[in-house]
Amino acid sequence: TLGEEAGAGGAAVRSTATSALGELLTKATLFGPGFHSRVPSNTSRYFSVDFGLVHLAGLDLNNLDARQLAWLDRDLAAVNRSRTPWVIVSSHFPLHHESTARHANASAAYFIGEAAEGYATSGHEFIPARCGAQFARGEGEPCEQTVGEMFAKVGAGLEPLLKKHGVDVYDAGHNHDYNPNWPICYSETKGAQLCTKPDGSQQKDYVNPLGPVHICEGNGGVPGVVGKSTLTYDCGSSAATPWCRAYGTGGAYGRFTAYNATTLVYEHVQNNGGKVTDSFTIVQDDHGPFRY
Image 1 (cartoon, rainbow, N blue to C red):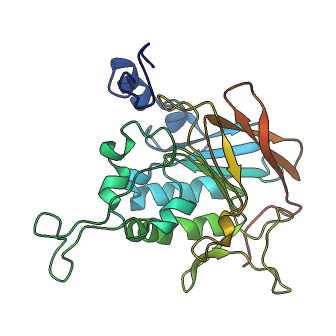
Image 2 (cartoon, rainbow, N blue to C red):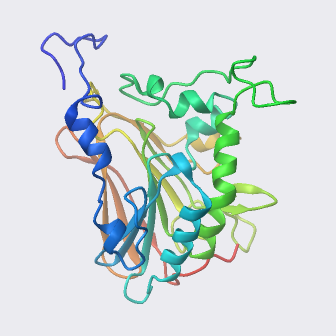
């Protein structure tokens, strides 16, 4: 919420995150589906639900343990793609984001902690990975874990399952901005890269994607979010993020529309006025495991 005296510095900004309401909302995340879905997870930490033509699996990347990965493997294997063709996996943290790629050497603990959230009304704050006795992880590792190391570990466990089950979209938040990406392909030897078509060209389109489409839409209701939005399409020019399609700031939310088994539309909708300032259409004629 915003106080009457809120100015450019946000001195009177008050977040609901530490209120009783915020505490409830963080613990009441679709509790029912965890126990009553087709493949129950028996926990509210991760779960799945079907919405018409879409199967949605929600994950907890704070602790992506073997049990959660085993459940996800079973859950995605049980999806009948003739009835529920579109599969979306979601988590709070994005697997691929242009700012985390550029700050791969930043502190992972700070990135996922409360201090970085603060009142960042746009984007995300980073600090360098810290070193010394307080942050050492053991002999030969005098510094704390970096953002790059954290997501490399998460990706090694999760991304093979996205490939195995042909997950169409990976949708996330955390970073207070908008970052839709071109299809991203993952391999154990090369890691995550912009997908390459059989003819050798890079896949900078959404026609029969060869890998999941990763989207970050993380600024739907951040306290103090500015009404003015920005959008740029040059983020893919960086060597660190060739898979980046666009980057935007300002308060907005995402809207999926599954028209049929082959056409899924994503719209980036502004909170202030409801204007759609970005959209793209994913066409997939052959749902199933990716073969890259």
